Image (cartoon, rainbow, N blue to C red; front, side, top):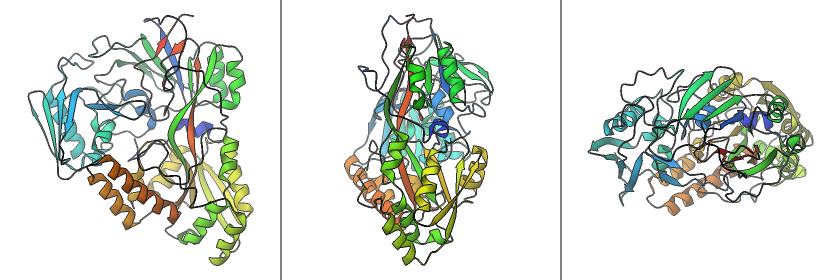
Length: 503
């Protein structure tokens, strides 16, 4: 997983092509519903767009590892529910001291890894200590405030140097994954976790199969196995679904809803998402260093038209989506006004401005076409450079060699990117950094959220980016499959409740 963010593979294929589809009327809005008695021997096939380059979740980037392995194969002391609440996992209980400096976890007894080795308190200490001390491991910096990690009996104690309001949330992700100390597993091709599923087979370039872990400490999985089929092409995925080879389409292009639902065997579901389609502006040099130019670009963009064209999601005028702490409706900061955009460019003394938008080539052209048209209306010539995702990671994310760029940021609660001047956004505001730091040390959730709200407003008013829209989650699910997560599937796919009937 890339540092402090995740880029959605589903978004790479469906950006700009989604149409809002009707919900199925599931009793639990966070999961799909179906009729029929679940078959415990059933197999479920789920289409994903991109696969990981390897299975080493400790240090390999890519949201597909989070989608497939976290919760299902690997677990931490705590986990997050579909609604984003912190729940106990390998810990049966946890407690935070009133000063926010001591976190105490009671480790479950009787938990075993997939290879049969018992989970011990020392495994927890070693996993978290190694994560903190190994910069190459993803999210190691999220444990920066942890001064010590100790075990006494089944009690695990984390002592902090200062309060960190994000720690529990961070422990639900890669920073909190527990592995067996001294494990000899080849993490590139295999896995050894404690979750309800174990890795059964990885056919590189094709699929990843997880099978039920019959020694699981919690409720048994309701299906025998789940296979993630990596099918980049939408039409090929739909053909596989209609042929009965795929039960769930994630990264679904809802323009094709009629094709899928016409047979009566599938229903299209919509859920909430924290995905943010971000138009980043490299403000280090050139015209984009002038805040008036950046504001002009935002003012030139018709956000309502984008949402209408996409057909799903909602407008978003700042870095925090509605479901995350610190959200505020920031539509008062900027509004669509081409005349005002031209005036701002005039004030900045900018004429005949030409800019290049670097965008992953797997994205639909719809979004970039709207941006080209909107900016052309105010006198900005926008050239579009479509590159493969690897090139985007190298040029934009790593080397910051770009002017404008669009990518979907799928990870929830990732505001810290705006408080990191070394991040590819190139945004550097000491006041925002201070407010974010204060939010981390706050021991009251409401106070932390208020500090984030203040910081987010400053970011939006500085115009370092434009938040084109906040995604909705759109999937197609077979009518005999229930319990498929609907919300935030671009970030996580928890298989704990998935079931399949014969009818």
